[in-house]
Length: 456
Image 1 (cartoon, rainbow, N blue to C red):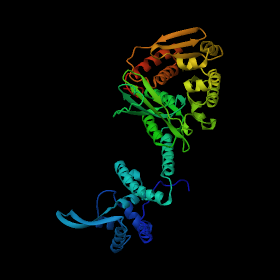
Image 2 (image 1 turned 60 degrees about the vertical axis):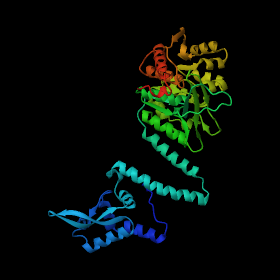
Image 3 (image 1 turned 90 degrees about the vertical axis):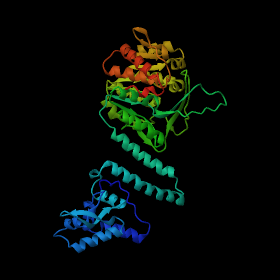
Image 4 (image 1 turned 60 degrees about the horizontal axis):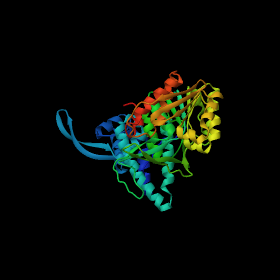
């Protein structure tokens, strides 16, 4: 058996009624032909169905089949008016029941039916099926979470596969779901703040980079690990809408997609909370989870906040194949694995970090200049609203940022990195690429969730 037709067939609980439905629908070629002939909506006269079997079956035999299908609950019988030779007459007619329409589509193809009706019928029958599954879970003490995770894993894997395309850039890192909550001012200790406004967006540094690249028209693949949960469902659906290739996303039933809660005050200050449990997925966990073919295909590889063991392998593999490698591990990794991260940076063409991350290194100026002497083409230290410093063998250049009214700086560094990567793909030099990244970043901070409005 090559594959299984993805169909659920609702059946009555009583065994004799089950047999009646199955035998009526599948017990004869005549019944199958009738069900295939019937439109999913609307009536068909008895005479039209009789004519279908002309010279093959007697009228009596056809009518008998119709009555069997009515008794089985697959057809609905009635009388209605029809025009015949200029006269209005009453005729016997039939139409499919919901169950009959479902079986009819099984016997033919949903592609022959309007998409809207397929969705409508599927949802209606799925609700019926869900009620039975819910009772089963209660009666047999089966956790519905197990079933939900299994479904979401299959759905997310199918969604991811449907986004596959040829790409120019591969982005490694994390995916999260951000809850951005605008507030007048940051709450004080013991203060409860009520708000009806919240913006829910994909998050994670790498996911933000991929989203920004996609909004600029770059064909980009994101490689991250997520849980089979609602957070991944929301984030992946939005990224797919933007055109991000998600076919290399690893969906795990054992993992939990990260969720970040961001309180954003009117003056631009914010508080960020990321509940990180043991199951929370922040990185790919093994080289076996890497889609090496996407690296081969890409011209630029962005290595973000993945574990340094994965980052080293990916950056080395990409460098050996003469890809442009951009490395931006983020503050948590530089704080906990700073020495290992600097070793990875030696394999990169461009190493990006912010000032807080640079200070976490200790003696950062000397160490970063040593990196560019050891082979890294440029180290970029972002300075927030002030711009950035570009460190190269030739010296240090400070680039000024455009003035911007900062409402939401969430993901500003990600947008900068995406802008820089886009320009590097176009052949720009480091300084010009960084200048474009600064301009794009300034645009993104003007409103809450601005990093997802770059195409506006």
